[in-house]
Image 1 (cartoon, rainbow, N blue to C red):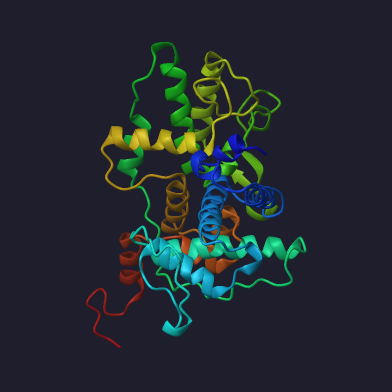
Image 2: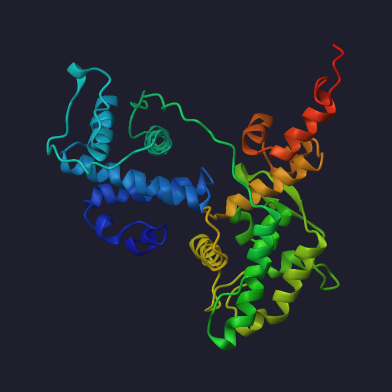
Length: 347
């Protein structure tokens, strides 16, 4: 894996080239570890690599080796990048040599992810026998997990009807592709990595119709079945009829304007274009369709364990946190279950 390959994950080429050869090789090892042993999504991979790149550059400037690191040095790293004193105790505070900070806000969620990336990096070093034990003993900060936001029916309709101006000869196939992506994300509850792994062969039945169900491999290499409703089947079939106009160079179902496999970043850019086109104020990212998929199932009365299975969650608690319950659903439960809801004064 080269500098160019690392930059495909969203890493700054300029920053990567600042690393010494030894640190660069260590970052490469981490990238391979995340891909092969952790089976991370592209989104997680990009985030973790960027976090460890930032940490490696900090160690390099401060003249620390990877084996020198302890929790105090990690706290010093967080102090430098945030401008906030992260030392556990003032007397233990080993401040950065440069004394410079970027003075940017660092939310508890961002702190947790960066800390998780660094801990994972050191777990890799332990596994490869580079160090005896993981020196990072800092606990992740408490974070408040807000209910996942979902897309309303009107917003979904607007996204499906929105059209992006493109070159005339590619306008229709790309528009049909975008619609198929949006419809499939919502109809199946797929993760973006699962959607991008679809191929034309996997999606078609023996009679060249779109399959009604398909086995996909999700996080942790766990297999599950996803279902394609008629709207998703229709939108994919319409796209396939025009897909050859994009001169595909791959068997990937969803391709970019040049015929190559659509990437995670490319899919997110597509959603962002449609968000702007419709004037949607909330953030739009692939997982929001997954939130909506789960929320709509629960609102329609689906058992949470069935939703858990459709989402591919190993833990029910993940599904309970992951899925939001709309106000309409809460109101319905209140009026149907609470003895005082309908003016009944009996106890």
